Amino acid sequence: QVQLVESGGGLVQPGGSLRLSCAASGNILVTIMGWYRQTPGKERELVATITRGGSTNYADSVKGRFAISRDNAKNTVYLQMNTLKPEDTAVYYCNAKGWIAVKSFESWGQGTQVTVSS
Image (tube, rainbow, N blue to C red; front, top):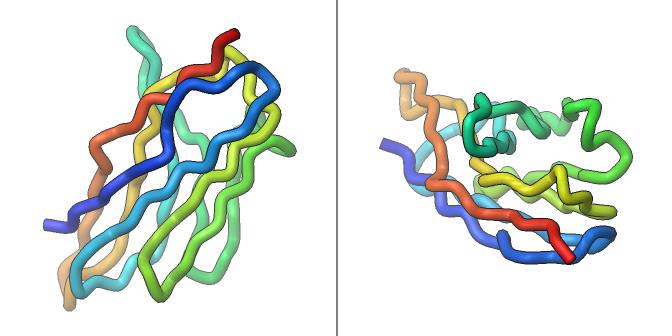
């Protein structure tokens, strides 16, 4: 099983910034990495994804404010969050899809809380 370790969540004031990190461990080939978020009573929603080649996809609500990037050598994905709004408050989950030898996998991180409040 592929383990994902997240870091970087916390409390920030509206308009502030945070950077999330997520590292995948193991002898793996990670194809797509991404970030999702979830608030109580709602379904988990896509925030942003990035392919191994660097192609990105963002939710409309974060376009222009968030930036996803990755380091393929470290199997690590980052989410730079700027101009944060109270509605960005959620638990953020890292996701990774790829291959372990000839077997595909999909793994989730444990989640990190992001709270935007004055």
